[in-house]
Amino acid sequence: MSLISKLIIREWNRFFVTASISLLLLTTVANLISGLLRANVSPHEVLLNYILELPKFIIQVLPISCLIASLFSINKLKNRNELTAIFASGYSRKKYIFNIIQASAFIALIQFLVGAYVEPFAKSNRHVLLGISKHKFRNLQSKGLKSNTIGTGKQWFKNKNYFFSFEAFDKQNNSLREPVLFVFDKSFKLSAKFSATSSYFENGQWHFIDGVSYQYLNSKSFPEVKKFANQLVPLNETPEDFKQLEADITTLSIGNLYNYIRKLKKVGINTNEYTVMLYRKFSSAIICVIFALIASLALFNPNRRNSVFGKNILIVFVFTVAYWLINSYIVNLGINSKIPPLAACFSVPIVFILFLAYFFNKNKRLQ
Image (cartoon, rainbow, N blue to C red; front, side, top):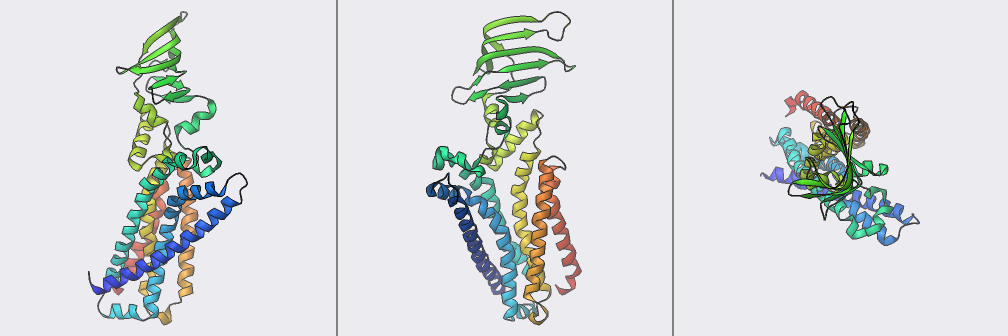
């Protein structure tokens, strides 16, 4: 790496660290003050909740810090006439932009790791730090199939030829409480029903205990009703499947989240909300690089006499606000199944990438 490259990356990193610390301090003060103003939580609980929320704040801060790092580092070199000297020495703008991509790509990797692993790990340990106090904070509420169905008192499950509901799943004993199975035929007519007080998994099969079966419901004759003490019921799911379906997706690392979504899709459940959550872990990392490049547009006007720093800040601010507003709106469309999750998470970043490609291509003579 040349001395000029080291200078560029060093200045960029210096402003990035300063911006990150400053923004984190602001979010820390705002979070702690808002928490301390609540009457139903103690200062100790507010502090522990902040620790659990810190990965989320880092994810929000890093893209803005990348933008500020590019903007202020370029402006500093410009004000000291070092930027003009760098380009006069034969160091191209293309190389400068590549240095910014190098620096911001490392931050994008950190952003991805925090969102994919650190934040879920923090959420999974909320019961350790806060215990029952975690219910006092809305940001720590569970999300997933269990939380979406718990209001009905039953959790519902769909497979190719049956519907299945249960009250609760015991992970220790691999058993289900109050299971009810509705089997339908190829014409989607109800053909049988099995209900029991409990069931357990043994030797690859589910045993229904103390229940009633209703057979031949799709025939013209009266159904066959039988009480049983223990009966084998053909369920294709294993205890691991139910563990996944009961999972709180905010505690799942990226690999487990992918498997969770895959299993839900397999049984025909709408997974758009969860897929958006998965894709956003990637798109939020890409945004770090995009924001850093947006602020680098000032490179094409290195003369400080012809460049107003306030104007550059205004332009970048408008781009940033436009991004967050438009992106938030489109992401909500994806969550509500109005548009595909892939389009919801990546359409706005792609538009910004196309804009940057057009701008750089337009000014390629200056490179």
